[in-house]
Length: 136
Image 1: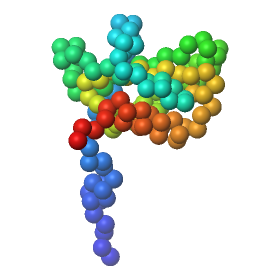
Image 2: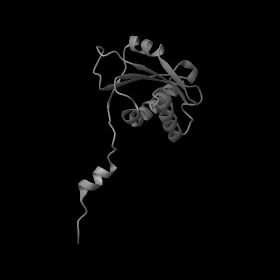
Image 3: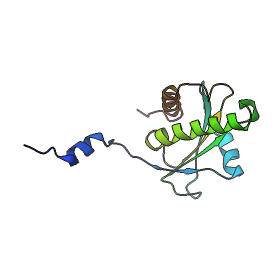
Image 4: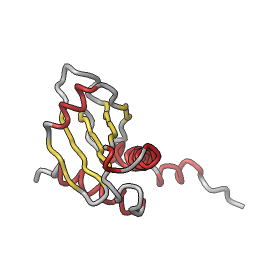
C-alpha cells in the first residue's frame, strides 16, 4: 500500500499569493482619514480604502475598522451586522486586500444582517477589485 504524500496535498491547497496579517483600527483619526479616501458602495455594505503613508505603521500590515450607525438598528442589530462584517473581512482581506492599506467597512440598514454571507464575500472581493484595479 502506498501512503499519499501529505506535504504535496498541503501545498496543493495553499494559495500561491501573498497572505497578510490584519489589525483592527481603533483610533478616531484613522477612521476620519479613511473617510476622505476612495470608497465603493455595495448592496450589503460600504467599504473605504486608504493607502497609508510609509511612516505610519508596518507597511506589510492590513488594518481594518468596522462601523454601523443607528440607522442599522438597535445595539443588538448593530453588533450582529459588525460581527458579519468582521467575518467577511477575516476571510477575504488577507488574500484580496493590499498590504499598507486601511479599510473601513460600514454596515447598511436592513442589508448587512439579512444578506446571504457568500454573496457578501463575493461583494467584498468585487469591491476590492474596483478599488485596486490591476494595471496592465
